[in-house]
Length: 404
Ligand SMILES: [Zn+2]
Ligand SMILES: [Zn+2]
Image (cartoon, rainbow, N blue to C red; front, side):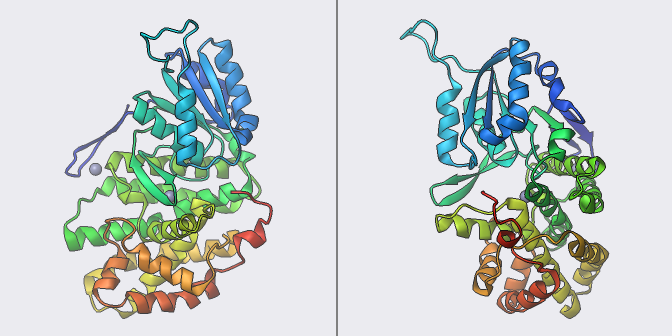
């Protein structure tokens, strides 16, 4: 259990995670960390099995605590079909068939992978009432310590409330070898936190929404850490991978401390996730989460800058002003890391902003602009600015061989 006293109205934050291990050869400690369990069901996909699963399987077998293994075909999407497969394979038949007994459940589910496998296992763990943990294979998103599972259900993406991982094991030597698009996705997921916290501050002052300064500061610190590390990712510097991995975990922890994703998800996520959903609605495989969020972040930054230049609301101006230096740093960072874009068509881009406002029930600058009757005009205006300042090519151009 991780606990923290606080000065906010909650006074105390607490999450049931027991161990977070981020180290060079963390995988080797898996059996020791999970020694209190006896029937561990391990889930991987073909790729994550190769990079980490094989070794984990061997260690758990040696320790006599492995029940069985499921390897999903890659790429494994976080969808209803895979949740079904994990659920179907979770129970083992007893050696002697007994109509009086249920099938034998595992006492622990171990996800080996990043976003998709983790979200899939989190859902099954929550539904079956069995604890789960994750051996991460790439610092690609902040969901390791998340409490929800965004899953594809037919042509819809639904965010289900779930539970948090009991153990998070991040092996830096494995994360260092992760494909570069996944590393970029991890950074993209973090860049938007400045926007998310600014949205949260605005809602606190306009709507009296609950706000925790300690959590907000922790998220901003984690973001700063990731921004500083970002330029070292392409060369796979261990310190950069460590800083990014720790930043992403910390952001996830803050979501769990807060009990909602408010500290880590604002305008940038609502726009990015709307683009994701538009793909899902059209039956396409969605792009990497953090890549969409990165483009959403630059969009949100320009919406804030435009509002700052125009607004006569002095309080709002002061709030935005605090974040302008961070926005400048992100603009500069983009010149180095050149985060690719996924949406370049103007109509689709603008639709993401307009629909993004109601993506979830959360007050952001999108709602503010809508209430002022300015959202459409702003969406139209920022398109040109964003494409001119931040666009260095599409994801497909940069990574033509990438599959899901
Ligand atoms: Zn607090
Ligand atoms: Zn995210």
